[in-house]
Image 1 (cartoon, rainbow, N blue to C red):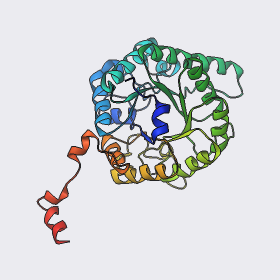
Image 2: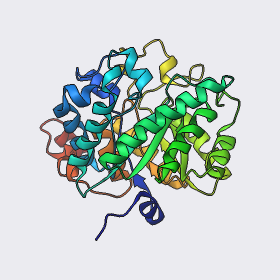
Image 3: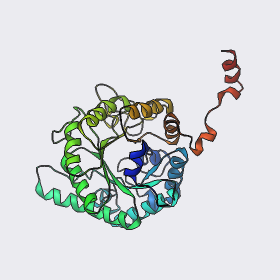
Image 4: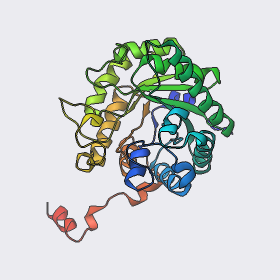
Length: 324
């Protein structure tokens, strides 16, 4: 039987996404903090392959292609201007190799840092950057596209246009800062409604905010649209004053003490489900252990659950549990 597509799966219930790639690969020594570009796909494909495997084993039903910041202008800042095609193609091949028939593969687009809402020439340039990535990833065989971490609704609409012109389901997500508005002045509800009106299949938020600071925005979107809604929070605590982790003084290389626990991410998973969120995933700071706990919170038992904790047999904690 042919593999069910993302929209078919969402009709059946929540779909569990994966976690963060670039910050996790930076922590492992395969991505450079600063540019955070994904040349790991061609430099160390085995490292990317292993991270995909970890997410799949933990219960992810979708593997995102590691092409965040793999547009021409962003790669140029890291000295990889001539590697756009190779990086995009190789990233898809690696994800497909791991996913096989066990998970969907989502092509990936992200903000380009080239969009200027008051400059018409930038819009055509950004649209062409998106079209280039979409064409390359389409040829290698993705199932749908996730375009993420947008600040401007205008740029998100260009990504949506490139995806829909190529004939794919589109999931579009925003990274809202403070106040929670797009930089061109639209609320989460307005962003969702406008994207839905232009053909988006899934709208939502990703990265930036931890679950408790993201879920109210997701709920606002859920009430505003009829299409599917996605939530992919960051795995780092922030503050009321600075509700997005990239604004914290610890970003990017002192975030370790701020990481959420796997139990906090499990709580997010069932809270999102109860809000009517269809696509439940995560972003920076979320590793395979978090995804396994999220899967189990949703009543699933992925392969990694064979090694879920059993503290009753721990030599110190076990007797305490028995006595308690």
